[in-house]
Length: 271
Ligand code: NAD
Image (cartoon, rainbow, N blue to C red; front, top):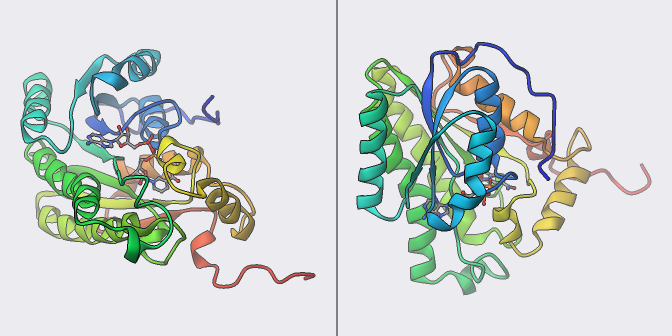
């Protein structure tokens, strides 16, 4: 079951409509963010990877009283065209976009980055995890005549080396750069673009990384707060970025990882 938490309700997102891309199941970060946005009055259209996920995503979407679910494979232009056309036909314009999508093959997420990164694996990781953000931001911005807020999810492996994270770390570095360039391009239209760098969390994506569980354990033990990264913290930060609370924040990567990212050396034994 998904971790449950205090879900502050209110009107911060009242009257705002947007797209959440990347709910696969109840543990998905995109789902935690969606619950928090819905509790603050947002109306959400969900895109999901394809038919096989519909059975798992539908009951979640139903449970928060929403009904717009659109299949969208980010590697397929026709599928993306159709998804954004459907949202345009339904709402005309939107206020926010959450991109919470990444993929690299299991073979790439282990051992040596130098030895295990194939041309095809590199291309696929960059296409799904980075180009899809640029593409989605462009499509979303076309539906934001009154400005808006766009965000994506990244990880510390973009900035520092993390065992097994490999090509995904390279992709996340590109994603963070893409966040800054998109923020620059779209800022004059009143569209803020930012990223959340979350600590390791127990999701399907983490399960694809060799030693993913240990990444969580180390993240917790080394962190300043000595705790796991919480869905509450990540979803709260997303609410901040996507609501008027985040005004004047653009091109930023906010770490939500219990302070793990500032640690150079962990606590010394015996102290
Ligand atoms: P998740 O597996 O629940 O979500 C990943 C999503 O990507 C899934 O919904 C999947 O369907 C979607 N996806 C993959 N390929 C796709 C495609 N071709 N078309 C459309 N959708 C596709 O895992 P998650 O941990 O919630 O991951 C969400 C985001 O958070 C990712 O960007 C991930 O890198 C990032 N992140 C995760 C962690 C963590 O520890 N779990 C930490 C920091 C950042």
